[in-house]
Amino acid sequence: MNAISVLLLEDHAIVREGLRILLSIEKDIVVAGEAENGRDAVRQARKLRPDVIVMDIAMPLLNGLEATRQILGFLPGTKILILSAHSDDAYVDQVMSLGAAGYLIKQTAAHVLPDAIRKVHRGSCFFSPTIARRLERQLQRSRQDGSPVSAGHDPTRLTSRESEVLQLIAEGKANKETAGELGISIKTVEKHRQSLMNKLHIHDTAGLTRHAIATGIIESSVQVTTRPSGTFED
Image (tube, rainbow, N blue to C red):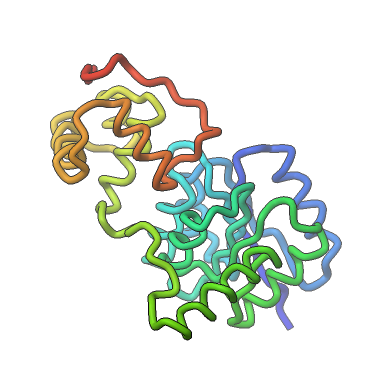
C-alpha cells in the first residue's frame, strides 16, 4: 500500500518543522512538500498533487481560505485538512463550505494529526473534539426547528481574484506591488479595488482591512500596514 503523500502549508518555520518531524514517525505517511505562503502552496499542490494537504488559514500573500478554493478547483480529489489556532464558527463555516475535509485547532493533541490525515484520506471528515461537539449541537438544533445548520459568511461573494486583491490591500501592499505579485496591470488592480468597494460598500483601505479580518481573508494576528484613510498609492 502506498504511503499517504502530504503537503504542509504553514508560514511559521518552527511549527512546520515540528509537524514534519511528527509525521516522519508514521510509516504510512510521507511529507511530499512544504510551503510558507498561500501562493507557493497553490504552486506546490499543482506540482506535487498530494493526497492530503494540511493547511493553515493565516498565510501571507494568499490566505488558506482562498488557497483552498483554488487548489480544490484543479485538484478536487485532494483532501484538505485545516490546522488553525482559531476555532471561530466563521472560519469553520467558510472552509467547510469551500470543500475542506476537516478542521483541527492547533491546541489539539499531537497524536491526533496522523489519525486525522488517515481518516480524511479515506473519505471521512475529521474535526477537533470541541468543534465536533459544536457541529453536533448545531445539527440537533437544525433537526428540531428546521433551520440551516449554519448561516456563516458567504465565501462566494467575492471572486477569486477579488479575494486575492483584498488580502494584498489588507497586508498594506500598494497598487504597484499588488500588480507585480499577481502578474496583472495596475489598471486591473484599480478595477478590482473599485469592484471590492462597490460590492462591500466600503470606501477606504482601513475599512477593507477590517472586512478582511472579519471575514477570515486574513486573521487579526497578521501584521498589516494600512495607508492613510482614503489614499491609494500606485
